[in-house]
Image 1 (cartoon, rainbow, N blue to C red):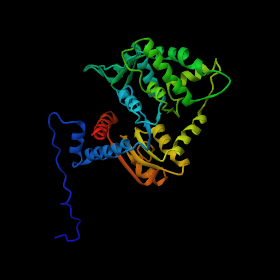
Image 2: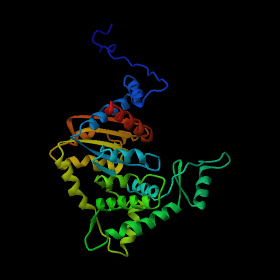
Image 3: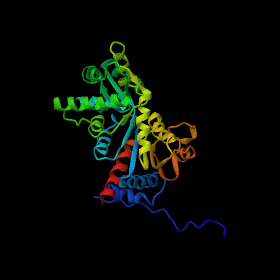
Image 4: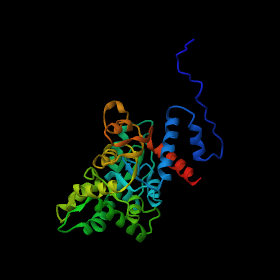
Length: 333
């Protein structure tokens, strides 16, 4: 007998029971005693629900990847409208695709390939037909043309002048313009993320805005008009928010610049995040930021020693809806 062996019988894995008519939260409760990714998601919902239930927690939300083309736009916009996001950090790509839908464009399903054709043949045909592919989502290029016109006519003119503007001012003006055109044109899709943020005074920070069609168009416009964007101007407002809140939580969807920008904000404050949840597919073994564990962030002082945190290593287009739905059901109950 192994007398010194840890006793495992106190906490056996329980097999999930799935029934018709279950709520999302009931499903996640079944995950709580399972293993691997199911247990990770259950832990994340528990942390996120506690974050949402505490009104004194300011939530910094990082949104990377192609989450808008993938169909996650409404989830994020509704979180903003319901007061569950206090600061949004995202990519220029997400803001670009958000605006495209706000002004009437659509992302589409399509056929990835045909049995008698290679993926290269398929993509070359898309190029000839003027259609851009985002994994298994398709966007006709005329929607980019409409977006560029929207920027030139509805967004950038309000930002020109002798004074430089911050990226946050640009994203706020984008949200205002998206909402105005959406209403004026009676677009059947909601005005979206940037519009919700503008309407609810939620700042959107986009620290790598140049790395997008939005940023590229801003630069092109600045070559013939007095549009100057000061990237450092955002830092004061962002850090003022971080300093002013007693408790903070971070939700990070994907990695890259939004993740680091959210987490590093705590480095210039006396505090650290009290809660953190990340949804990622990137492994920590590469040493890159996108896959870095939240435990590693604790070593930098970005998370408090007592912070509650959870990571889910899975496709965020699967885990984000489950996380949000289960947590929101839980705080209503």
